[in-house]
Length: 411
Figure (cartoon, rainbow, N blue to C red):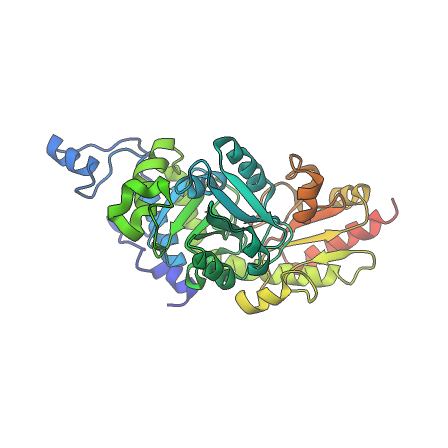
């Protein structure tokens, strides 16, 4: 099946109760059993079933199975937010004294998280650019994972997943990628060598800005050295499945960051139109970026524009598409605010992947806890505007942004 057909008719799409075309919303906390013996078997994972919605829920399981199929993984675990998914994807395999290698152009919240992890004895070494050449010198005997974004937000560099994963594997460590801004529509990271994929489902997967969530997809292809990865030592008997088993039955369950059933349902609904939305969003973003790049005094960044940081890899890895986010610089913070305030159709809001176009000034919002060096590495400047392009008519978006920029020049 092709992408859109698989979203609707894939193996993970079940025959739901009463002939429903979508999974029922199991908005309950617990599930009853006919006998103590049956309940005992479920609690000990000796029989299929659900015991408590923090541990497993039918609606959430339906979403996990469907996103797992789209990513080509072995198993998926849905979380209460994208940030919690990132946190657990790392804590599931790391201990005090371990090190992360990451790209410097990360989302501000991820940078803040990595700073928090230092208090637990887990440190991060940053490469300015997420390339095999730049991360090679950062490996040490304490390195346990390489982490990066497929399309970095907001610097919009595109990772060479195959090259980075091959280098990570040569050093005996897995590659975890955040594919939120790419989505399964643009790239399948596991097919290129990534070991674990993380999404903030809040964004493109949900698509309508109506709920917060995250998901972790494990490929179960990495061969764990349990003497090095101490967090997984108690799961040796599960071999390649150790990461998923510990995540599902230990740290995720114990920390309690489960996805709500209603959120899972909304994500299933959103997932079914992911391909259509992404096709329109990517097309709109490319048209808007091209139009804005022709305005004098404006510096535009989008992976479809030749000369931009992500252009070459977008041609190779994303089939020439650049995703739905673009940025542009206007010369000063004051002018950036003026442009943002004059927009009629773009909504001044934080997030990505909505059906409507969203605009924000990252320097004064998303990166308020970052240092000047961190902002510079991430491509965040005081005159930079980030745009998450929606599904409006491209002509209206182009007119709106062009008019706002033109009038802002008079300030």
